[in-house]
Image (spheres, one colour):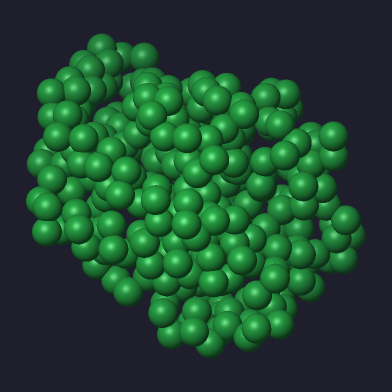
Length: 307
């Protein structure tokens, strides 16, 4: 089967466009026929979206629109969690209004811990200590911290998802659970497996972020392929970006992800989104998509517009 053409995330619109119509025009000039609206989109920007470009919006990434200061769906404080659920319902409502089929969501994190431990882990990796005992001890300590504190936050995330599913079903929108780049993030691979077992395939699926997974793989946690192979029939889409060291959101070809190896595990039906950083030129964006196209991960008919 032929893969689908990619969407361009509004991540790239930062410092470029405050108007979504202008962003979509430039995305079309590069060669994209679809876009993903992310957390950089404000309520004002979304309300101003011209009706004629609405069909080009394929995916919403919660919180979208982003009013600011949205709590995590895993928040153990019920008042804040209720606010998080309300914001996620709003993203789903907007998705239905725009005819979008998937809302991508991060479920949150294991909180109440000092995040400097994760920063220390990354610092040691960057210092070349990946194989040294001090790095492995730090990694083990961070994972122990997570395991010892995860239960109430995972349960809160589960409750939030359970409250969102009926609204998503009524709206005709699917929820894509996205992996994140931190050891403390929810879900990890096993938690995602359990959530997919509990919630039906008609509403809840998996959304794999290649950069986030690669960072955790390099830190000694779960691999990108572990995420890709977790539930192929439940895989709704991917955020494509490359990683050099621990720096992500690079265009493919500027990092070291093995796209050929990944491509053998990605079904053709999944929705591909390019989550490239804002500082790339249009020409660089096109070259990154061509790299994905080389391995059959996206269909790219517009690849020669800026070549």
